[in-house]
Image (cartoon, rainbow, N blue to C red; front, side):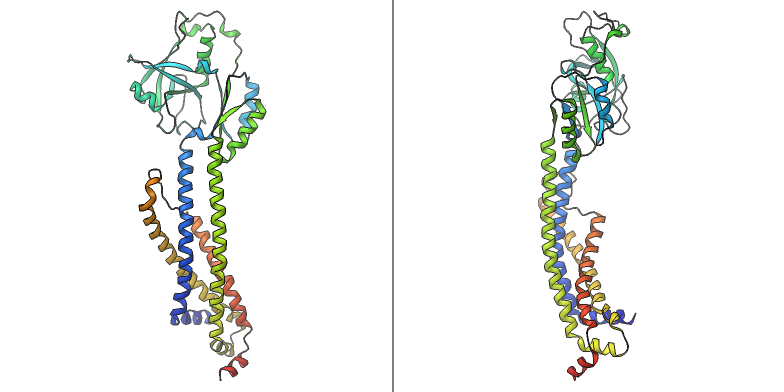
Length: 398
């Protein structure tokens, strides 16, 4: 279109106007981009650090209570629940562990687990003879993946201890599970509890005072994982109401971090809104004054037959070009400032975490918002162009 070509030529001929408006954009956008990037980077780093520990999503019933499968089964279908497993009584969830060929014994906590447990890495499966151990236990007993091990009960009053042979399916990293612990299917813990309850275990050559077939399964508690941090508090409250027991979870820490994220977003949103008002006003007056300064030129263009609606595009085209240049320069300025900030302050973040972070989707959203703001303020100047009376303007000029 003719008017687009004329607007572009005029903009680059009058470079001072372009440079001033671009400088205004860069001066406002670079600090905002840096603040937004730091907020995203720091909050994401803290969030990922919390999510790296699966216990952040865990809810445990406190103390020893008695539940049946009928009590636990409905919980598995609740929305927001990622994993549920029953627990045995706390006095029976410790065993001695040793490497099959070793002599050193180490007391370890037995934790019920299974498919879907966030603590287990993808692809790792458990079985009665394939268990997962913590890095602390593996380090103490010199265990590695595939190594054979033995679980030995601690009942001093029994003539024979229960010894279970198994293999290390995986060694968890330190951040996934601290201390000395073994993850096993609930059936393994249930078997150990039956031993402590003096039931006969003929498959293991142990005679007890009660036949195993008379045993009625009872759970000493449950361990539940939420799918997302945002669902932890609500799930904990619902679980306490459903089971009528107290629970343990990192709800306060999680809510504190989520609250920090919300407050930072609110503060940044308020800052961005105020900056947008100032930026829109500054550029709006700039485009308006430029149109007023070029009334004679625009009136001449109107006289050659260009309609008012097309003339309205004159300041809008110039605003779009100014916006594109401002966005490119602002992004370059943000990248430079981000690298400087990373070198100065990035050492306090977890390894590999970026101090500033803006995703491609957020970048596109920022760009669209800036262009929309410029089009709106330039459209006001364009509206004034439509009201130009060429004859009147040219008489005033002559």
